[in-house]
Length: 251
Image (tube, rainbow, N blue to C red; front, side, top):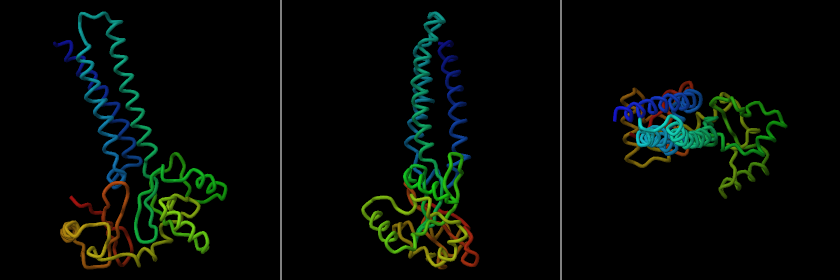
């Protein structure tokens, strides 16, 4: 029993160290608030955590036996470690491919843009055009403005495409512009919390209370939704400077 417990504890500590290192790098680099919440990657993390921190060490405790030869025990643990490695690689690739790259203001909403939201053909075109805000493998999340093009035909084409669930302008890096360039337009889209879409009436009350507790007025034109694959958030700006002041979620 003591041998099994030692094997379980050692395997658990090693798995915890590897998983903590991986998730820590991804979180500190790309998934910091509000990225983790908006990307809604909890299911992937739960699968990886379940395999690496629960299933792996438990299986090791089952196969571990002082009566086994070192060669047999090494083989059994290697099989378990291989399964863990496959799960870890799967989770890592999912998190990497879905890493947050931009928080974009587009039309009347703020949106999270993840790596797999950027269309590969559009990315290649943006590189040909030497667009200034194209993403690279090392790019960390940036706040940008993603306006529709001024050309009427292209404008209408993208809108029609988005309506039919095709690519939207947020997946087209050639149209990305600096965040500061869109602040004047962003200011015109700020609303009172009660007038903001994406939230149920009961959720708006919760958000209003949170704003009041934090010292922000829900009756000012200072709010806009921040959306992603998870539940939407409420971004609050300073109406005088159009500076992002706070981000609230419905608890």
